[in-house]
Image 1 (cartoon, rainbow, N blue to C red):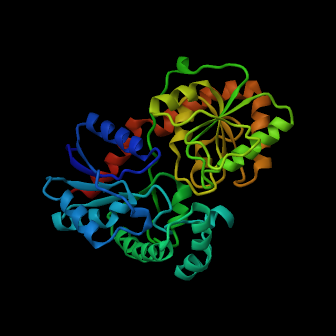
Image 2: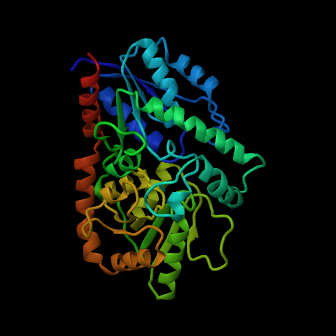
Length: 379
């Protein structure tokens, strides 16, 4: 395949997506392609509805005049600007969707009503049922309801734009399933995010064993389920340390069983992963393919994950981890307790997990999959 000039449009998303995009871009450069990464626009208020025509045109113009053979948007908020720029430049456009943000601006239904989007999801439900709960829980400022309503209306335009992309990619089948009703068409293209391999000697073990949660202590990420599970295990006399890497929850509980070590950069998180025996990812929202789960696999860590989104795809059940129902702390505690009690399973699972990470998520393999897809679009 000839070397391509690829233009990546990426947003300042929190979490692991910037690392995923950077790994993909570096792997494509190794394969001889030119990759230009564009981002850094001010996003203040974007989640409250402040994305519209002005941003779309400004974003589109920022992508033009770069001689690209293809534009690949890696953030849902770039959907319309990337499509406009690609059509004006007469080149293919690709979009990777990494969350359910194009279905609803708050998606609170996933927290309380099960794994599927409700059939009555719409503007009326958002305004009368979801928005009041959102405002009370997150102390939203005055006027937040009409801003959510505006944002929901703009989602319809963005969904129409997504349907016109030459290719839409999902990091997992679990995420793709949530878009099938809204974005009908050909079967989903699933290309997972890459993860760096980790040398086995970098992983450490100690006593008592560490059970690790990495991320913001939000309802969607299942932090309270992790905290409740840790409390149940403490009451049962299980000897382990439960550690949280990330912002401290507010408000904190009086009998907090979790040690909070604060926010760490990527290298700091990696150091904690080296010490952990078990990594817990109990998301209630349909996470596409959380980086913490991929990094834990690369380190050979035993995973306990929820059954939402792409998380079950990260685990070989019983061998490299356990999958539990989301939002059930008792089941989560039982799985963590079983993993802590079975040292042989954890040690055997280390090599399985590293092999799984290398076979499925190595950067060169993910880059090769993208390269084949680009080749089918660029003539």
